[in-house]
Image (cartoon, rainbow, N blue to C red; front, side, top):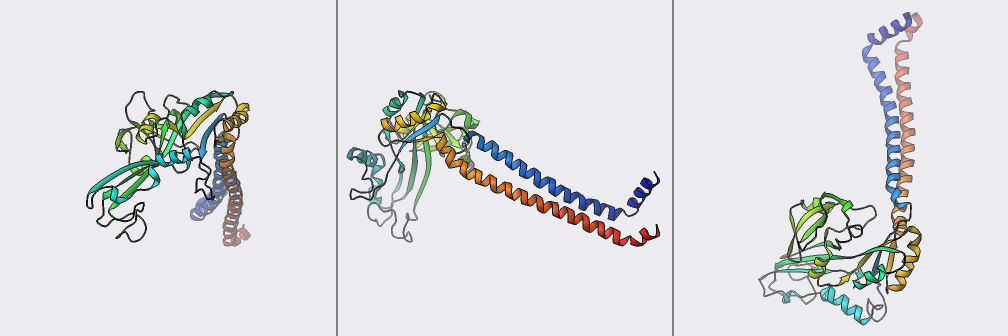
Length: 362
């Protein structure tokens, strides 16, 4: 009991050194605990993120990507004459001249919808796919880029098909013309479980309702960067849409800036009865391979992306990041442990050196 009382008396007598030593030991131990906890937390977070991608799901998407060709038949040599005409008509010919927008000095505003990555297909293909054995449900979708161009027709016209002109400082649009674009997806609201956006992704507001009201759901990042929220309006093709919800992007999913009802986007973009993505859900994961093969045989030029394909694309990067984080966490834990040992050793040696005479007397 005497030794314990003496120990506490000595600790109180040199309170500053006692606090400094305890602080050094505490910092060292805290470093080890913090680094280890962060490493374990990151491992658990990565595992949770990767979990939905580790198994083969029953959802898949069907599209018709444009295959560019270097043949003498032009960049779209693999397309039939009918498909080329359809692609050109849907994208407004791909070019326009400023002289067609009005007289010099007049204000103009132009809205158009383009899709340069994939071909559209008739909506009847959705029905064809739904009749394949092993298919539980299907939903059509349409994803486009909405371009809005406004400004003043310049005094001196440039050549048709070119946006650059005098006073523009080289290529690019003239200074008196502004061009903005955003991605928009049409969603079949009758198939809530399938599509570019589902009710489970809504973080604020609600999903599409029935009726002809022009409603829009915004992606979280787009809404945040543009200061938009539920109740605001966005314009597409010159029409105002009321924002009814904000949606998050699912892991590995392709997001659009704005989601609207499929029929309304088809009408605005002059693509009635056309879709460029078909969302498919198989009866079971065992049917995915057979259904995927049958879809490719049924729809000309179809490309099917399954959950397994998505997992291969996404999980590879996440696994590499997880392995790197684990190695870095282990290295930091070792460094923190060595630092803690060094701090404790230096403080202990310092205390012992200063009190050598006292130890000798005792």
